[in-house]
Image (cartoon, rainbow, N blue to C red):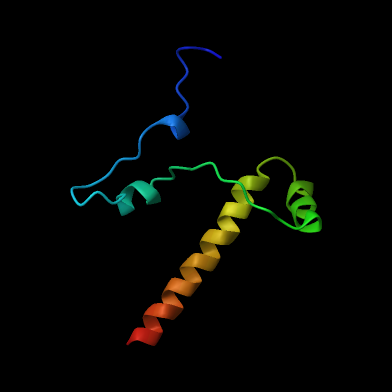
Length: 77
């Protein structure tokens, strides 16, 4: 591996004073490598659209998260 290359996933997370990750940092598109088990047919469907399937999966999950945040906020009021 190139010694000059420093993958961003290998860098420490930026934290604020209370030692929690900053929300602005998460919104900025910082990625974390994870392992997730998906149904084979679903993964094949995402891959069939070409390169960028992980980005598409992330976008679907983000939309779901945002929709549920809005719903949860509405239920609290």
